[in-house]
Length: 274
Image (cartoon, rainbow, N blue to C red; front, side):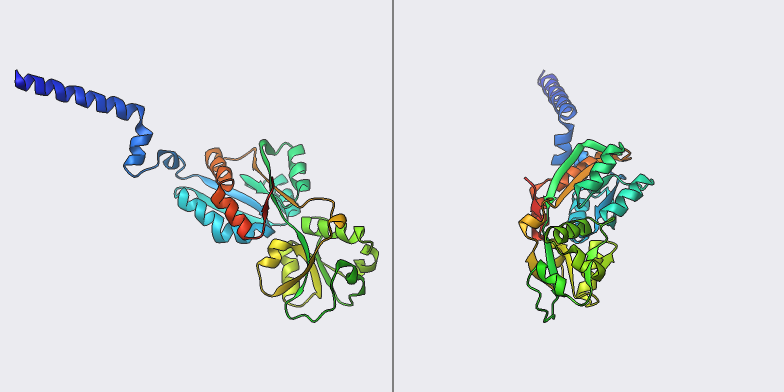
């Protein structure tokens, strides 16, 4: 009789455990050292198309952090000017996430029905600054002084580079565009502008504050006056409608909005848009 009672007790205990595991399998999996949600993403890939000014933050910190959190997911990044990326996406670039340095390019893709607009987020802010080489003895102290510069002034090409569009807006609103237009050296993206100044092939340049912060080869003279830059430097981010690995894409977007990711952006000189 005692043996029968023991067997009955064991049978009931086993049944309880089976039911518990069936209803809380994810919890048990986590307890055993796994992550069922992360495991579901194994083999997926996130193709990121991001403005050149984001390269350092993504390559140095954010992508490694995400891939450590989701070891089965690979992030492949393409960096260029936002205008070039817009064109590449329109021409079929395999991209799951687009992060632009301006709303203009994002809005164009929204209008072309290429963006999942439910994921479209006004995410980061940046500043526009005037820089010179670190060893420069230039007398430049403001944007207005650019009209007296005899050498080259580097800016992004306003046709495709948001940093160049912002630079043109500042130069127009300070009333010196006509004075400096013939001195402009146009870069294909903001990194090219930064390199021109850092290497001394341009006397000065207009870049984002985050780019200036990335090297000791340049120094910042000043920020663009608030009344000269009426278009906020906003970085939107969104998923593409043709994203192939939508679960990994959403995980990546969610990760960017975590406090740890936001802290990285702030460390690299960005401001979180509220």
